[in-house]
Amino acid sequence: MEPSTFDYSKIIETRESKEINVDFEGVTYKFKIRDLTWAERNLIISRSATFKVNGMSIDLDFYFRNALQEMIVEAPWPKERTSIVLRDLNSKFGELLQAFVPSPFESTNKGVDEEEAKK
Image (tube, rainbow, N blue to C red; front, side, top):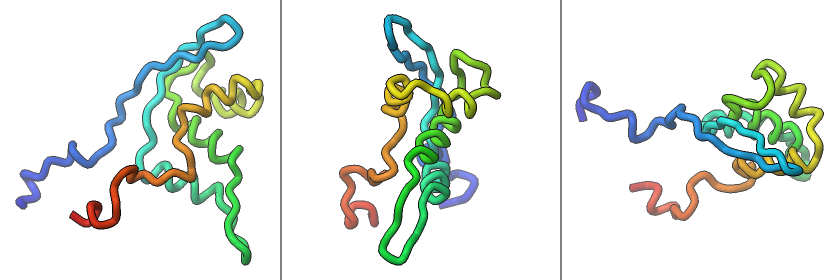
């Protein structure tokens, strides 16, 4: 395939955001979030992992807060305050936001077996 005719749009993650609402104690909080790219997700997982002789552990607090920092495009607070707000969130509200973050334990190729991925 000629490099000039290759359509990258099929393999590149779009940077478009989507609107989400988080309903908490009778108030609806509006956010705009975007999906993490493959590389962003892997980098956050790598930075949150600790490798030991008997296995690996993941700092889930680090993973979810950093993933949300990358994903949140607009929030009810100023963007530059996101890391501070996420650190101090009420646990119930934090769990509602966390539901939008992909699990660090899930495979990104859901439903694709090894043979299918090679095609």
